[in-house]
Image (tube, rainbow, N blue to C red):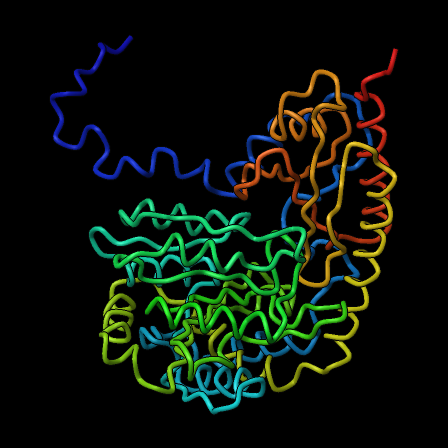
Length: 425
């Protein structure tokens, strides 16, 4: 048996960055890992586990990516042209293809030099938060929101402040709240559109007001558009870069969601900066310097990007949208049958919906985390608790699963709620 170690004798104790000790609590993966630990795979329950907690529909055949994308990757690998290290900013043909792809929705043309390739959108977040961080600064984040931003801010010593998304207004940004939060040390605000976790889609007029507010405050906008174009309601997707003349915008995106290939890890940071503010303030220079010391997306994926973008047919995108529209309808209608759950609005984009959980109507359920852990144990259904996105006693449910699996999972959710429902004496 080993002797006890005198930790205090070592120079690296406590950890150099103590924020990492709590990082998993700010991670969807970390929270889902705790919930799935409640599933007893050998407990005799032969029902399949239903994943309604994360946004990866690729395991379901109806969400399989287009063969055009697969062919492009195979061709890039077979060519032997992409076995080398790429430039830190990304291969020029890939940057050009992404610039052209994104420019189709903008009132100006992006240059390939405006595009920087990353290992998916997660690394894009990591990089951009590191680039804008400085001592004493703060950043404004949406609540509910994707807490990976808070985790990266914490690691970089950047204060996170939260503005509300308003469920009664279709999850629009509380712009008056943004102005109240900001001060001379605020550097940026983050928006996610289409919305994760809310399933909302911001209108043109609302985004214009966001741009005007950011300009008034003298801050840039970081626009997470990883779910760009995944809309199936009354509103079309409008990229924040449309307002680049009003306020500098850093757009984050990837092929993960629209092409249903999250494991391919190809994302980007784009500077929507026709007035040159990001160059004048050295943000672009710092971004390039950071890329010099970070990892690159695989070269063969970069080599495949031009063909993936140019060869993918609209039929593939339309099919994906049609399935999401169908499953969003199923989710919205099925949730109406559960008394302890309230859905404030029908989702119109992304892959998620936020619903309110009425704990007072349930026995032996303490909060949203307890609800999700017991649901996983009893019904093998995995749902993300609202605490993982900054909204306690809410739930984030993904409907990006096969329709039959979704119906099965929601029926199990209903059975669980009925079983734990308080009986009126």
